[in-house]
Image: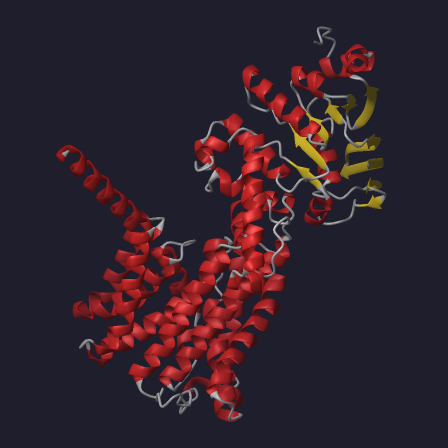
Length: 254
Length: 322
């Protein structure tokens, strides 16, 4: 479905991502792990075209998307979240999800201004979808609150909600559990599993080992911009290079 | 919701009877001029308030609309009913031409590019005497021709043309902000990165927003010029761009009521401070500073807070009575 082919990104003299290749298969949950600065987020930015690769390609359904603009990549069906909570703070939860439906609502300018039948039908359809998404992420009861007034874990959920609103084929989560407690991480894992069951293919970066080992079908480990291992969670846990690089010698991976 | 409807209807009804009230021709002139400024400020609010880019180009578009309609009607003899829409289109084209380079920049740079544009337009108005009459300007600009026996050379009748234009503009903005396009503007204002991730083309929608604001600026200019029958470059300097920005901020940027209140303040306040003669501008400046300082979200927000307080007090009183 998504193929990353020999992708390299250099910032001046620093090689952030060095000749990395991998495949994301339809329906799976693939994890990206690695110490800080190992190039995980850079890979996300390369896939979603927020950065352009120095060399190499990203192919989505056999189409090269590595030099497309970001909004076009998004409209092809690849949604993403950000490491830093990135939501519309001064809008309500409901309005946030509606912002995610930008491309799903199909009206033209004239229809918008005259608010004709097509406009009304499309907006009603959007209402239904907003409700559906809010229930999926468990924020329906808080829909009228301002995004800035809800707890951080709900903000993380909201960010996922915005990303899935338009029913993407691939969802890319950049540290979904950043800044959350163990309890809250369980809620997020449940949401990620639920999304996978809904047929969304997921690529996830995560630091919390509990989350990643629990949720992923397959894992890719990076260090200094290079892929050092790829395999099932159990295999990665036992991989010598991973233990050495990622855990700095510690062996209590669980 | 119903209460809001009633208040709105009353305000609109009141605005229709204003020419019948005995407020004097000078005050009627101020109201008309304020209403023209409402259109100008509503336009600016689209890019500044809803999309988050403070543009210093609004007086430039005001000028382009004014001169376009004046020259087309006077020199080419085209009906004013046609030159006003044409002026809107011409301003829109300039909006696209300026927006394309300007919107690739952000923050201060965007302000500088749009300010330069206003300066260039002003210099052009001053210096191309053949075309614009230079500093002396263009006199004898025609009124719109009579329709159903309504003579638009009378200020009282022209007032209704302005009023209806304002109502159409406000309805347009209101509907725009209820649509996916309006929501795209707000998403861009709040978070450009997220906007891209959601599939919004930044350049396209910023351009659209800027062009709409330019067109409304031009609309205001065209209405202005057939009202005063005279145009020279004076009201199109950078100062007036800044006044328009102030009108939006004072009223409450990113709201629909804000620019209406702001426009009236910007026109009425300096006029009514004339009693204070030489201290007028100082008092004016101090008042602006105080408003910006203590009401950063504008007067609309203050009214909202006051309104909610009154409501909760009324609610509490009725509760204690029970």
